[in-house]
Amino acid sequence: MTILPKIKIAFGEGVGVEIFIEFPDIAENNSTFINTDVASAASSYTVDNGLKFSAGQYVLIGNRGAEKAEIDYIHTSTNPTATTITLNANSSYAHSRGEKIQFIPYNQIEIEKSTDSGATYANITTLNIRADSETTYYNWTTGVSTDYYRVRFKNEADTTYSQYSDGLIATGYVDNSVGAIISQALNSMGEAVDNEVLTKEFLYEALNEGREEIDRHEMIERWSFRNEFDYDAGNIIPGQYKLTLPTNLRDSDTFKNILSLRLGVDGTPLVSQDKRALNRWYRGVAHTTLNGAVLTADTSIVLTSSGDFDENGSVDIASATVTGAIDNVNYTANAENTNTISGVTNIATDGHATLIDVWQGASFGLPTEYTVDNGVVIFNQPFADDYAGENIWMDYYKSITRINSDADLCEEPFYKIFIPYMRYRIKKRKNPQLKDEDDSDYKDWIRKREAQVNKEFLGQDIRINIDLP
Image (cartoon, rainbow, N blue to C red; front, side):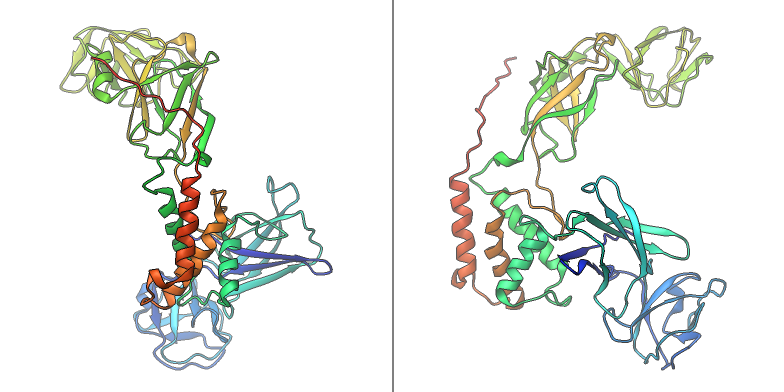
């Protein structure tokens, strides 16, 4: 279960830092209902179906934010039955038939502070999640404006934790943060998050959709602010021929958004090719991987596939690190039915890990071409020992980063144009019959969107490479 805590922060002289932590999102968690009214200090609940729960779990009784909602703990040694949930400690409030009981994985909040701009954090307090409020409030009276804060949820019983929230400076959201954009849109309309119609999840998704709309505009191939220059993509490893691309590369199944790929201190540029053109470099080359680790004393090696390898001869095993070297290993027999080469000699002292590349007939060197397949760069030849450790540099265009928290930042330098878009989406949410062409905020969004598109300047020359057969 993934729960990302969300926080808001306010700072004021004489007040210190005020931290507001939203109740965890448990909307999809298992739930049941109370079958019989119970008084306060109850030791158990009669329910529709207690088998959805387990001993030693926390449960929310009632709806979050309700006046008498509470978080209880199921008895550690008495498993719930079909009709009864037994508690570890008596309830705090009386509850009525029909109130919801829902699994919640955490009952506490840990708050941490950073005095070095979010580089390192230290715990300042642990407090219980408030079930009778949409937010849990904490006032750190000695906090200063330059400190950063983050939180995570905690299960007090088994000491497990959620992810951390985004770190946030004491003075609150910066102008291009999601929280600032959404707040400006809501405040200008006299609206607020109500967790029913205007939920945070809706607002985040609406903002993502607006960002996607302009990001994929038909008149824009790439936005200049998404350039990533001089990215260190990794180091050359002898005998290897692939490189995993950065996860934020736009359209990672093709090289069209790779502006440049360069090798080593000389910045040797590589030429992009399609996969069929690249295949010619591997004609007559047998390639597979190790199917299991290999020790220096082994006399046989199991390959993933040995069908393309000679009946006897030698294979080259790639290094796993920049400090290693290609290992040339002799063998006397090849059992294709078991993918095993035997009579093996000359295995390197440290052996080899499973899934390392194995070659026969390969020419090792410095690649000159590459292609892209499913998020991976494939070079036109495996690297030679001489280039071990040299950097692989990339210039590329990043994909849009989706937001899911108030503290996330909009990458777009024109983030202000999303305020009329969000006002329009809020009105549309509350009135699905609203006609786009009649709404002033929608028209304002379209005008600002098109103006931004028209003045975009990529700043990069367009070059066309033609591959002649």
